[in-house]
Image (tube, rainbow, N blue to C red):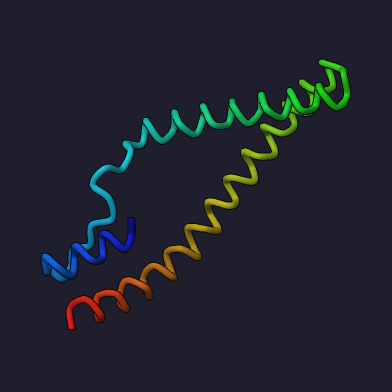
Length: 103
């Protein structure tokens, strides 16, 4: 996908200060709903596996409850770390791409 965007940018010689990442990006509400539905799928999966291993529904539900809290916290910290690292690297990478595309 990125290769396609870069080749289009080079072919069309779009404005220097404009980089198109994606025209089809999800709206924030859709992204939130997708995240929630994915978390539900993951938690149900954890509970089913826990039940298969333990044979006890109350243990499976307890593990699923703990898992949803821990994964939510882990995801939050992962997002914050990614935002810092990705922002720094993306800026350096964007400058390099601009130099290669526009020269």
